[in-house]
Length: 340
Image (cartoon, rainbow, N blue to C red; front, side, top):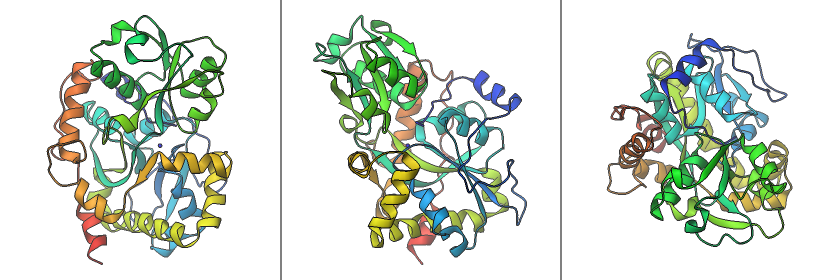
């Protein structure tokens, strides 16, 4: 969902407190700044990812109002900016990955996952030039990736699976859009990107997908994440956000044509392209949400995934110490919706 930055070090967190986060709002965006004060609009951030675009439908179809919650929906051109904004208290809620949430918690943020929007099931890809036919072939090659994103994480997962380390490749840190452009310009050998930048990268003649998030089920879940302050002070509004999400999914099912127009406009792609992205994103139903929050022994269980991701982040040096992830999930809001 722009994707999704693993805030790797404490310095990033501290820096985010000192800088003003720049973002480009959607035409309907309200004022800047956030407040958990009763009655103030919830500041909700989202960025370019198929599983998060439905928030635009919620806004345009006035589904927030229908569920009795005031929301300033804020569009971010840069995904990292949205995470920094939530960490710095400039947002009350944000759409982000589990990896990024764990990294922020490791840096001292007090955040809570209250809803699973989706799992990436192919929309995060490692795309390579002609002549690279296996992960082993990446050894010594230059791979561009937005450093700290989940596509960086995906690259490391693939390398580890093939018995390679990050030192076996030349990682060139570039913003995701710039990385895709550099790959198309034949300046690098491979690139880690997410939809819709996957389409751009594949414009390079002879290029192909080497592996994707489909090969690592449950590794990249995407969520509605809120500050604990919002839960403590305005739990009814957190519930309304969750209710709005499922109302939006219901609207999309009943109004497919109108929904597609809104989604493609927000994504800046054609209907055909969007349908391809949609196939690589598993949007979670209420039943899938309830199941995901339960303990389990594989990556489809959020508590299990959080432990595994935490260990991995420490192993690759993206966080210094494994954070306490025992309090980052709160399923009472999806349970309340299910019991309605």
